[in-house]
Image 1: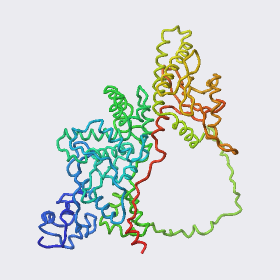
Image 2 (image 1 turned 30 degrees about the vertical axis):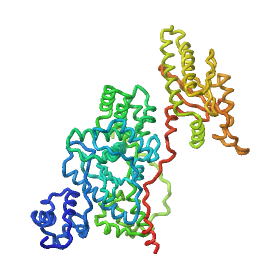
Image 3 (image 1 turned 45 degrees about the vertical axis):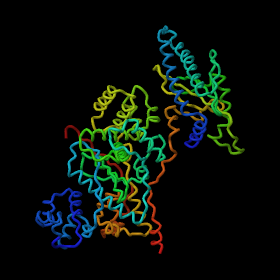
Image 4 (image 1 turned 90 degrees about the vertical axis):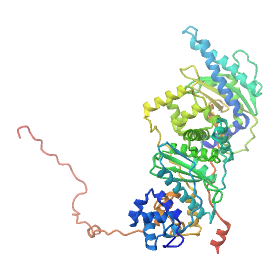
Amino acid sequence: MSRGINGFQVERLSQALAARRLSQIELARMVGVSPTTISKWRSGQQSPEADALERLASVINVSPEWFTRQKPESMSLGLCRSNASAHVASRQMLEARLEWAQDIVLSLSEFVDFPVVKLPKYEFDDPEKIGDADIEQAANACRELWGLGRGAIPDLALAVEGAGIILIREETGVAQIEGVSTWSSSTVLNRPFILLSADKGNAFRSRFDLAHELGHLVLHKHIPRATEPQRHKLMEQQAHRFAGAFLLPAESFSFEIRIPVTLDSLLLLKQRWGASVAAIIMRLHALEIIDAEEKQILFKRRSARWGAKAEPGDDGRPVEKPRLLQRTISLLVSSGVMSIEVIPRHLGLSRGDIASLTGLPSTYFEGPAEIIDLATLRSANQPQNVDKNLPNSSSVIPFARRSKSD
Amino acid sequence: MNHLSNAAVAALLMSNIPRDFVLSVDELLFAGAKRAHAASAGMHKGHRPSVLGQMRHFHMNEDFSHALEAIGANPTAIRGNTVVTGRLGIFTLGRFNIKAGLWNNGRRSRTRREMSLANRSVEPLVQPGLFGDVQPITEATVFFVATFGSSDAPVSIDIAVPDKDMKGWLFREPLQVFANRYYVIAEQPDNAVPMLKEQTKVETSE
């Protein structure tokens, strides 16, 4: 590097651009430098001067010193719970957000031990080799390992975090991607991460998304990112099957189904099992309780009665929220390891980003609210000038009726 | 009947009756009801309801007997109108059919009333006495009750433990719900807990 501050980490700049979904040109305009300068910073030909770094940090909303922190190994997104239109910038943004979460976990793990990672181990290296029976078995093995029995899972997010998985749930602004999952490298944390989109705010869908990502982590750990559409589709179907098997186990769930299946009976099961009617219909088909024609009829009736997106009772269950990272920060504060004000400085990220990634309330770092005495009108403090002789009760005085001749 | 007493009776049932038997009874009683309906279909409508009721008793008695035999519960012989019973653990097992609504008709059978007397020892689980020691439960009775509405299949098949007089129910639950009790965990464990490292504890205490 020819000039500028020492130790500027070019990878941090690329990561920040992705996290904020900014182009080089947009960033250059906001920082007040030329796009070429940003390009030189990114390529490492040049480092920003101290004042430019201040402006850059202010625009990105991180501490200037954060740009000098070495970036751990990248977290490549293996798979997305998404449709095909999810574009590159969105994926890169989610990747960067996950890496920020990884940074937070890495920093906090200096002081705390997180729950031990407990996932059933499989060595599948090709999705073609994974059969339906393998998926059902993997879902059951996961339940057994986590001590969940075969009944409805009251809080899936709690179970996932209890198994050492880092869960992030935040608004991403990317409607096409409902969730992503990946593993932090063995040289960094060797721990799985799941990021769920909070944009839709539907507890039932969110649970299914979480179970789907869990499926990827369990089944596809050793399978590289799928590039061919067919292979990607197969892996998505496998994660779907896992989610259904995990949330609605064959032995216990299928016994509650009465034939013929009706939408109203499924609405009751929806609340009990925490899975949408659509997910239940898919599961019934996977278990061969209903055939393809019956499945189609149920989906047709569902669309005709409720439309394609919403279902009755969608607000019947609160959205499950992550707890582990917010508990960790609360623990550090309550045990006197760090004060609230020090945490953002220690992590180098903005208060808003930390709150969003850890699930803390957005005002957590603002500290307790100051109590201000409101000014009162002088007249309010003085006794009203009321005639004490007036009676307390009032009487109704009838008006004289108007005659038609008036 | 509160949640805890409900759970206590359910636990007693689950410790004596395997889940597989519960599923088997559900399946067989359902099938028996269907067969009975088919068998009575050609009868004159003037006495069809009576025929259907009797056919249900015979077919479902046979199927209940098969379920008891399959699990090794020593069913009593099928004979006329008598109730087939079996034994699993401390429980004597019986069955009857009833119309959907209030279950008043269950007391009509003298045999069922006599069987229910054994549940004297189960009652303290639901309503503990003020005095006296709780006696260990060595004998109890449970019924599988199929309730019928207007359709050919049972509206519900319940597992039900009557009080000693068969005037109330110490426990009553549809088999569909009861079967899942075998898998339900009492409370989901909360393991999403970070722990301070030992070194951190030492440094903060200094």
